Amino acid sequence: MLALRYAASVAIALWIGGLLALGAVAAPSIFDVVASRNIAGGRVLAGAIFGEALGRFQPYAYGAATIIGVSLVTRAALGPRPSRFRLRFVILGAMLAATLYAGFVLTPQIERARVAAGGAPSSLAEGDPLRVRFGQLHGYSAMLQLVPILGGLALLFWELRD
Image 1 (cartoon, rainbow, N blue to C red):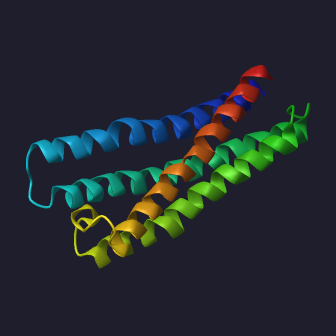
Image 2: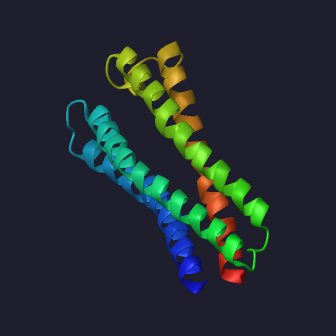
């Protein structure tokens, strides 16, 4: 049981830690460095670099969800059942659903909006519908990442209490 709890705890930590590192460290760093170098099309380049990093992280999130789910189910089958088992499974499902939606629905929509803008949406006028749509999609994507982060913190709390 300890090995299963350990595996789940590591998977949760990697998932939420990866999201926090990408959003709080990598994204601002990439955009700041590119902007400070006055690179032509720098915002588009920075967005492409960050988008690639986020895309490469997605399989790790799916793997973490699998490890967490297998750990919960195996522990429930072998007994004793983890505390708040159903709630944990619902939270894990929400975390995975948010991650899948962001990766397979929002990311392609963001890319289509960027292409439709003809470059950096930030170069368009403030009220331009393409810029507004890009900003909305980007905001949804950023807010959606709170689901696995907050859910992961709750799951980690229960793992450490079991």
